[in-house]
Length: 56
Image 1 (cartoon, rainbow, N blue to C red):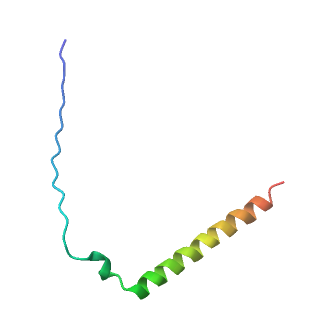
Image 2: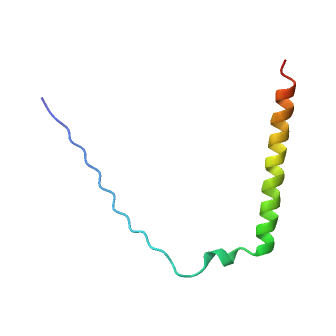
Image 3: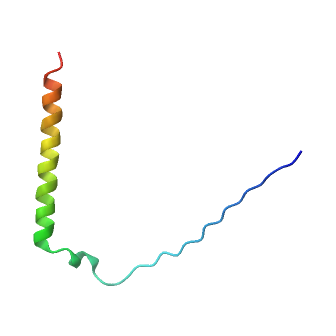
């Protein structure tokens, strides 16, 4: 009876940089993103609430 043994070895190397990547996003852009995210969440919650109100 043949037996098949498979082995997979994945080697990775993780490295980090010392430069500040957070500074790449301007504060103004971050505020716009936060506002858009908040508005989208409110819209989704409102749409879900409206759907639930019509079920009887």
